[in-house]
Image 1 (tube, rainbow, N blue to C red):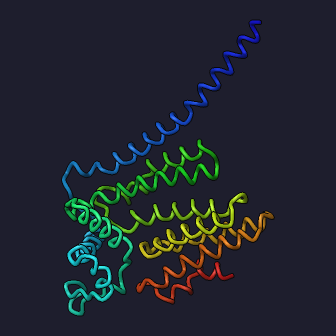
Image 2 (cartoon, rainbow, N blue to C red; image 1 turned 90 degrees about the vertical axis):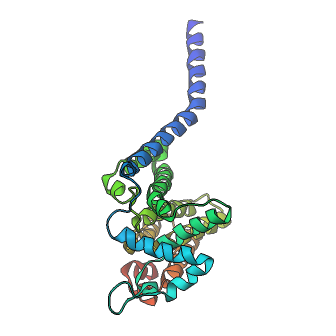
Image 3 (cartoon, one colour; image 1 turned 135 degrees about the horizontal axis):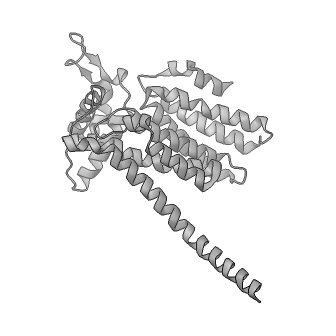
Length: 285
């Protein structure tokens, strides 16, 4: 009788822990996000400033778009800035990645449209820590897909305290990495979901399209995008070599690859010449 009673107690404890496991997991992830965000906004104690020179260039592009409203997105590509690269000026539309100023300007215009007035400099300064939250969440989701919930929490924690990522997502560091890294993680997470064996054809296309859009916008935002883009052909080849090739894998790769390649070549700074990049050529191979 005592053994049966002990077994009943153990089963009851197991059920209670399983019920609370999701709460504990959510608490840990929230704590990691809070830690990562608080570390990154430490420069706020000295006021609202942008860090180094490139963020000011990005802010100038953001200001150009924001001042002109929704037409600023089109005028950006014909903007010749005579206050830079004296005396000939700079063809901004052909020499700058539009992704970061476009995203920040879109947020500004949406907030302005619903009656929320924000200071443009403050928006640019808080943008990197805010995007770091997105990066930490998708680091968790990516780790969870590859190694379960413990791996996801560890992935989120390591990114939250990574000095390399902190440096590029600090309050005031309004530069390409602040948007490039979250988009990279979203794209990889979506592609891993697209190539799951139990995924339906519709699910494959949906996740692959999300992956392609994220990676394509990353290519339009970040000069280092060509390195993470190489993982898509690599993952696909490895799955095929491991005997997991199926028609849905080809659909996922084709959808993702064609989407991000199309977006990349439409960026004036990259253009059709981007097709000669080794990461793009590897996809054709």
